[in-house]
Amino acid sequence: MRRAAYGLLVWLATIPVMGGQLAMAQDKEAQPPGEAAAPPAEEPAAEPPASEPPKEGDGKTPVEEVQPGQGQSAWSDIFVVPRRPVLKRKRVEFMPTYNVTINNSVIRHHGFGAMLNIYLSEAFFIGLEGTYYVEQLTERYFLLGVDQRVLPSVNHYLWSAFLDFGYVPIHGKFTFFNTSIVHWEVYAGLGVGLFQSNVIPRDPANTGFTSYLIGGNVTLGTRMWLASWFAIDAYLKDYLFADQLEPTSRTLNETSEQAKNRAESQFTNNIVFGLGISMFVPGFDYKQLR
Amino acid sequence: MRTTRPVYRSASEAVLLLGLLLGAATAHAERKNPLEGQTAIRHKVEMRKMRFEIAPQLMMSINQDFKHFVGGGLVLQFHVADWLGIGVQFAGGGSVNSGITGKLIGDGEVTDPKNGGALGVQQVGVQPSRQQFLDHLASIQALFSAYAAVTPFAGKMALFGALFLKYDLYGMMGVGGLYLANSFDQGKNGGASHARECSDKATATDPNSCDPVNSGLKFGGMFGVGLHLYFNNWVGLNLELRDMLASSNPGGLDVNGDRKVTGDDESIQNNFFFSLGLTLMLPPTAKISP
Image (cartoon, rainbow over all chains, first blue to last red; front, side):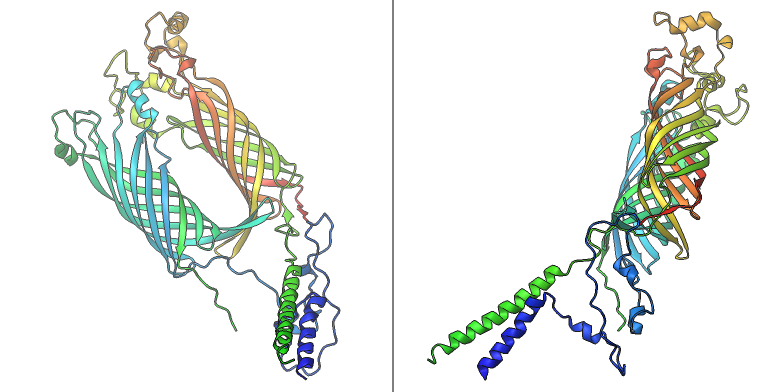
């Protein structure tokens, strides 16, 4: 009796080997509950297509061959909709950034910083950003002195810190030479914060002075997802503030405090192009309806 | 005989286990992803393949030091494949003073010494007058290019989750040139004899009264990126950023310090242009990929 049982088990075990397919438990469970009569047996499913790419005028994909209403049950009318590739709600984004001034001919600032954003929903976020700047005087600054014999009033920005509010209005995807699909999105933001700028004195014998400037910013950026937690960013940001410039009539004996008291205020658009990498924590999971 | 039974039983169990493992492994190996090796998008609307593109554009420069170019032009492009096109572009227009130029010449008449500009000629023979400064500036009158365009990225996007647009991103590379002009009048600056002095390195001259030698055609390379946003299968919005690399001397004065204005004062300049256009794809019907 025991030998017969073992023999039966061995036979059962060899069935999948001979058949080449393991029956899946879900196959039976997929039957709609409460159906009175079992549907007639269907033809076995067609073999999956070869992995060779289709040629012009080729047939349909396996997915396209499924026609609504042709199946024996209502279950065959269910279509698969791709899920949103990344969820951001209640996640924190950390983004190290580099940016560079693009609208100033005489001084260029290289900004090294970071942003920390919290997503309140899939579209809205609130965040903090901080940037440290390194200045670079351009060739034009030198040439204005050589050719036009004038020395421009130029400030070096030391650092900035902003509170940002953002929104993600555009989502998209693209193919790279029709091979792989990449998801991306566009975000826009407004911010309010602080700059510290330092006057570069025209006469090196004079000392500069620093000013704290309240400003705002407007951002337009794009993010390309490489993983559910990782993306690369590119953005344009316009920092708007009233800069305090060295007076053009500053004399040699004038102290920095005196010069600061009669500094010339000039509304400034400091437009930067920036790059960053976004890292999102924690992970996320899709909620499944049962 | 009882001693052999455990051996037989364990052999049966081993066969049973082996059968299960083999069956599972074989089934797993034969379960291939039917989408493996397939193209990313089936039945894709090929917006570019074998189509002719006409795009009237508005164009402006974005990084000129003294004179911004503002004008209009036309792009003609034939797309050999969905990812490759060849095109020509032309734009013509005028120029407006940049912020630096405005600061240097002031707001009033150029000939008025009390107009508030920085060029008050405080160092006669060294500093250019306002008129000399303006006469030496090179302004871009036209630009043209012939290039190849590669479109690796094409996709669709959702604006506020409601408006869906097809789009593509492309890069351009080719050859082109700028046509530059200045308002320098040799007749008002010493005539032909003074021009000979200016070109003679052995004779000391004031470079502010010499021909800036920065007008005419300047050939170079063209690099750029662009974006199409399609409203339907043949009308779209076109945004482009082009960099015309050409050798020039935008200020038209002595750059290398030899007190002469010659071709040696030129250097390779990045000339960035932004354009906004309306794209029309012909024929109006796009092909559908397999």
